[in-house]
Every structure is written in C-alpha cells, then in structure tokens.
Length: 151
Image (cartoon, rainbow, N blue to C red):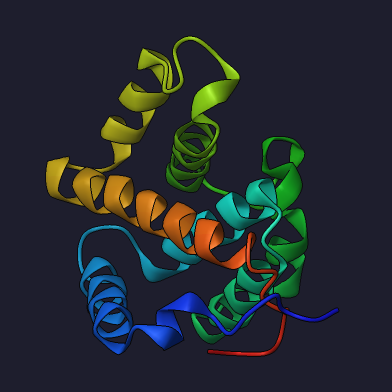
C-alpha cells in the first residue's frame, strides 16, 4: 500500500505544531492515559484508519496496556477486561464517532454514564479527545497514510 500523498499535516508545519500541542494538552486531565488510548483505538477502528490503529496500539502499549485488552477493544461490550469507567468512555467514543448513524447520536444514557465517571473537566477532555482522534482519522484515511509509517 502507498499513501496518496505525504501526510497533510507535514506539509503545513504550523498546523502540525498546533495539532501536536492539542494532543499534548488533551493528555492532561482527569481521564487516565490508558483510557484515552483505548478511546483512540476504538474510534480509529470504527473509522477504518489503519495508520491510527497502528499508532494507537503502539501508544497504548507505552501506557501499559496489555495485548489481551487491546485485542478486546473491538468487542469491549462482550469482554470482561474493562471496568465501568472505561466502558462509559468507550460507549461515548463510539457514539461521538458515529454521529450520522442515528437520530440521537449521543443518547442521554450514554452521556449520563460518562458523566457518572468523569467530572466536567474530565468529560470535556474526553469530548475534545474523541473529536481530535476523529480529525486525525479524517486526515489519514482519505490520504491513505500507511500503517507503521510514522509521522
């Protein structure tokens, strides 16, 4: 497989710098790093972003995730490997990623469950993190960035 073009962010250094600053800022807050990595992986799976799935697995391993849990992310609802807070974050990530799949994209029950585990600043972090991951997916998928190729 070959990318259609160089990563667009690399062609706009100021934008790349801003994106990296955003990613760094959104790693800080009340949502545990390993949960953010699970969210990144799940949203990227849904969007079919091979580049981001590969990167997500690598980053999740750095954050201490086990292969057992990483393999189970795609089937998190049926897996015993996730706690209730992680499940709430994954459910939110799925809803916020699949906005056009239903009339009420992020139902109240999904929101309330996330809010049950994450106070407002952490919930804001989660909302923006999911949006950021989806943005990265939407840069990498159309340009067919190759998994494992790095930035």
